[in-house]
Every structure is written in C-alpha cells, then in structure tokens.
Length: 281
Ligand SMILES: NC(=O)c1ccc[n+]([C@@H]2O[C@H](COP(=O)([O-])OP(=O)(O)OC[C@H]3O[C@@H](n4cnc5c(N)ncnc54)[C@H](O)[C@@H]3O)[C@@H](O)[C@H]2O)c1
Image (cartoon, rainbow, N blue to C red):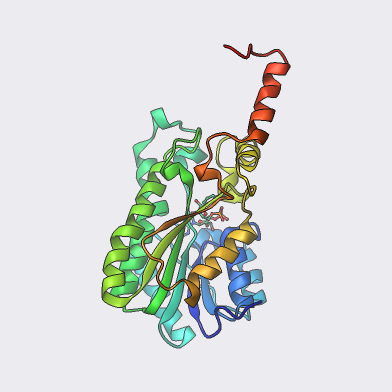
C-alpha cells in the first residue's frame, strides 16, 4: 500500500464479478485511499455481485448506467459528484461486448446491427462518457481517464472478430479527445492494452485457452493478470503519471514487440515431432 490515491475520487465502470479487471481496480483503488462510485448495466447488476464489492469498498454507492445512454451517463456523473462531494479525479472504462462474438458470427459474415452495437458499447461509450464529463465539468485538473484495450487494435489475431475494430476506435478516441481535454482542462486520457485475461469478456474470445498459453510463451515476462493490470491502472490514476496522455500503453509482458520466442517455438516444433508436418513444408 502506497496511499497513491489518497483524497482522490472516481467512477469505476465494468465490475461484473470478482474476475473482472474493474473489480480488481476497485479493490486496489480502495486500498490506495480513493473513494468512488461503481457502475454497470442494470442487467449486470441483477447478478448482484457488485454489491459485495461495494461493501468491501467502504460501502461505495452503486449507480446503474448503460454506457451507451447519454441520459444514464449524465445521471451517473451528476449523482457521483453529489455523493463524493465534488468533481472526480479518475474514471475507469472497463467495458466490452460483441454480439457477433457471442452469437458465433465470424468476421466475414458479420451481422451489421450487432457490429454497430459492438462499436457503441465497446468504443463510442468511451467518447460518450468523456463528452458528458467534460460538459458537466466533472473532472479536476490532472484527472485521469483510462480505458482497457487489446493488441488486436494493431495486429490481426485469429478470432478477435469485430472487437478488433472497436479497440482501434477506442484507442483513437483517447488520442482525439486527449488533445482537447488536455489542452482545456489538463485532463489526461489513455488506454491500457492488456494481456488476454480469464474474465467473462475474455472467455468469449475464440480459443482463449490456446491464446493465453501462446501469449504467455511469447512474452519475456509472461502474461499480465487482472491484479497486475489493476496495479497499473492505479499508477495511471495517481499523480506519478501526470504527463502521460493520449497514449496506448501495452501491459502485456512484452508480447506486442515479440516475433517469436524460444518457449513458443519449442512448443510449436512439437507438432512436427509428432509427425504432423515435415519441418521444410
Ligand atoms: N479479458 C481479456 O482478455 C481482456 C484483454 C484486454 C482488454 N480487455 C478489456 O478489458 C475490459 C474489461 O473486461 P473484462 O475482461 O474485465 O471482462 P468483464 O466481462 O468482467 O467486463 C466487461 C464489462 O462490460 C460491461 N458492459 C457490457 N455492456 C455494457 C454497457 N452497455 N454499459 C456498461 N457496461 C457494459 C459488463 O457488464 C462487464 O462488467 C474490456 O474493455 C475488455 O475488452 C480484456
């Protein structure tokens, strides 16, 4: 514990259950001295687990909001300021969902209504949250907004589907709005590109077990888990990172800069040893 967020106030989107990245961020933010509100969709709240998290975090208030609804976001931010006693210092956007992924529609046979929903939920919601916060002047100077992304925004990864496009938009919004909000109010906006992680959203990704094994073998430091991601989010909310904005920062054990590693190659070569392929093929 470093008291990195002592006296800071925030809003945390996306804690569904104890595996959620946002759940771990809330736990650490509480440990580090922050007070905050928690939010998720009314549907997600019916599972009820978020109330356990709220209790753990000094009885944090839980406010339902669909992050695609401007009205819900306005209500959330206004109420959060009332409850927390003023402007906030940090916002975590930890939201992602693709109906194409859920319903097994591959990238070359997308349902476009689903695609628009993917973009709205997983990317445009980030813009909406930032735009509403700015209009309500809800964030203190040097405040920090973070959203979670994935390397599929830059590279093709089998099975990530239309979420790759959503993440590309998400990262672009951090740059475009980061300029405006930084210039006007010294508020910073970044995305953290996280290793594949076993959560409800993560488990939706096709072949997640193989992917987690592969990226772990490829990364010199191994995959980053949800708790490590939360540590990094806390750092990004703290005053120690005041001049970082408009960035997409990889929190992935080095995976994004690798081409091939010994550990991955060794495993891959086993398929040849088993006689499935000839090495020169
Ligand atoms: N798990 C991974 O492998 C991984 C890797 C990189 C990035 N991420 C990103 O991390 C973020 C958090 O995901 P997670 O892995 O913790 O999974 P998760 O399933 O625990 O969290 C996703 C959250 O999005 C919320 N959500 C969905 N639709 C919403 C809406 N309309 N309004 C508000 N909230 C909504 C869900 O209720 C849920 O709480 C996502 O952006 C995800 O893409 C995950």
